[in-house]
Image 1 (cartoon, rainbow, N blue to C red):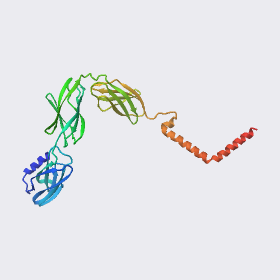
Image 2: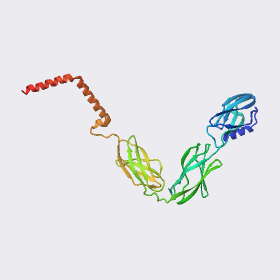
Image 3: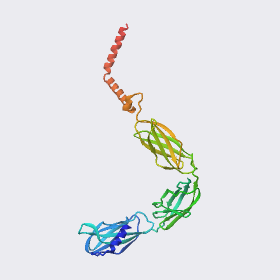
Image 4: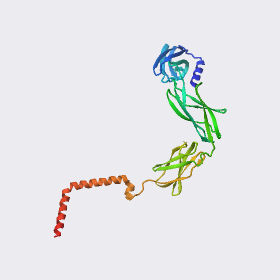
Length: 376
């Protein structure tokens, strides 16, 4: 839009070198989606020169620069990849390059309008295949789940309008291709306790596609109190220690929860970590990451939700390798390496035994013969 305004200003400025295009506008009918269409226009410049060409539509492809002498034919191509919900009105901007200073200074400019129409009769249509609201507590943002299916023959970019009393909230849904089904979550402004009726209108530009009425239940702030619990905790020690907390929500409302972990070493607080805030309706896993040195630690874990918190859950863990029955060697080499060294030692002993088998057997016979002789 800004570029169009700039170009209109350029058109109002008298130019020493007059220029023009023929025709003054172009309409392309019966474009087949996915196929390339070629067209042209004439650029007229009595004094000639170099011109820069751009377009505000990605469907139009044309050369970036052209050298014009008197009347020059300019070819361009059009390719529409997806069926639009409406005819496309595009612009081709033509700027004269100022040759004297070698700069891209516009000394003359013109705009050519190109209208693109496809062959198919446009039938924008969609269906709401799912809509539901999840109960929340007073002071929380109501959550609405909306599932849309594009059952028309054009790409849609629908907009959702939620009406409650005199308040209207508009939220874009995003691109929805033909035959595509997508489900998304939308948040509304907090409501007071009670049952609320909300009107939902789905539009594509000015075209109204669908309407629904839904109920939103807002419960008192105490609805979730004491009903969110830490179900399980697991620790993965390392340079960056991960604490995974399994949280269960047995309340009738959606809660916004995050885990908070305090790390203690010899009863001294050495770090505090917290997870991302997550919406929980049934159960979810929350992760907390913390950089810790070697040693024994105690973790105190809480989950904060809807301005409330759970009881403290404690867990003890160790970071780094522990000395086991193999002592210092295990600490330095690790248990896996000790097993490998043991196997290697057995292989070496077997090789020595095989190489010196005859000597060992002869020596064994001598010893046994001497024993028998002495025993007489």
